[in-house]
Length: 466
Length: 114
Image 1 (cartoon, rainbow over the protein chains, first blue to last red):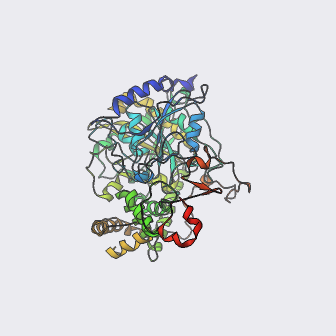
Image 2 (cartoon, each protein chain N blue to C red):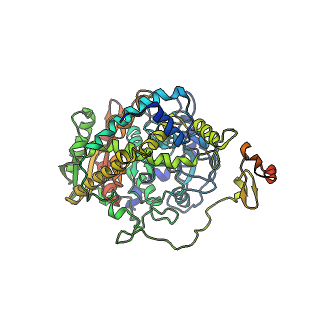
Image 3 (tube, rainbow over the protein chains, first blue to last red):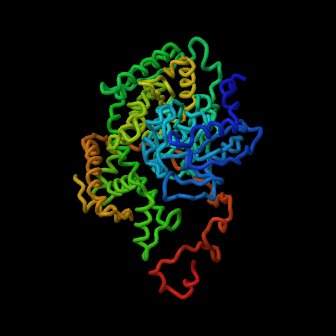
């Protein structure tokens, strides 16, 4: 069948092959440190399912029954959930074999995976460089060939940016498309479960399986899930994208953008034109406000969500004579520097006297950003195309200023603020490292976005690695 | 608006986050650096009619945009293991947690607590 023709490599990748790759890349001084826990006894639960026997890896902030869920934090060291995330359950019920939990920035707060309490993940393409974050372990596990499909989570680009840094595909679905039951909360109005794949079709299959309404998540949308894996017919032929209008927002291509990244994007746009798409320049004027808005709203919600780690209900507990000091000592010892910084920032912008100036203002500007996307899509634009990140993967330790690190999310946070789907795919290399191209789509238009990405992937061929 | 060391102490107390005095100066600098970039939002004109960030179809609501309500019934228990299997200790269906010294005078029964 044409649908399965793009999935043969996925079905050929056995659990034994996964362990052989794992043993080659995980440990040692140059090891990736991509996994925090593994399950060598895991077996398929559905031998006839669409993912029967396919090894998958799960970011360590999604609850699993057989393995701990630490969120990359000392706070949850050794914590084993008594329930399972819906996305993980759906993968297992489709036959997938959960071989391990992947390393991540602590509580998903980071863009380089250097904030894990269990050490940084290395980029499989250059171990001196970061894999991106916060889902860096899942991205590295796919890029290194341990698995071909992995789950991550997105609050501001934590699937797409590591996908771009590691040269693989990463999809962030529409807010509400995938249940977040069992996803440890960071910023609830922004969090999504996302999927990594070695190819567009593989990531699409993973998303198709985990998508759909779930009564255990009140924010999951009751919108039917269509087939997301593109058929060969839909991406081949002379002009498979005829009639598609692709918008290119000028604010994502400033003069300061790395010239080589801009050149790879222009080449990808030439391919889209040759596939029949009309490419049109558009404007999203509030793009430069997205980082300030995001880094008010996300820490504010995080400061509330992370209040539950108090030494009583979860994980670590420090000894103290009284309740207040027990809370403070537990949280001081359990959280790392970036998590503390965001809790303090979030508490500050929510505190009396500052709420209106920061949090309420950020919410209003967020609505402006979302409205600009709606207006562009209403003007006849079907998809948007941009770079995924402003730079290729940087070196471990290279970015130390917190705000400079936040800026690596500049092209990804907008989709989270607007609640729309977006994905990254490899479109070439710059100075030896992969570059990601990003599609953004209207809410629930994942199928359209994935079809265009698959056609571009096929058209680029080996150029995606050059 | 500039963040002072006292501001950081105040929000750390609100957040129940213990901080050493040595941690304060870099945190004050970092928070001021980050918040300095946020001041741009004060200059933005936001129309009164801007509404909500949510995409209309992205809500879990009905066609009028009202939140969809589920049946007023408890969902089935999703726990894969009995509570006793992961609770440090239980009594009469309640979790027992380590006793704090200041609660010692609350009653003789607490002497039996874990």
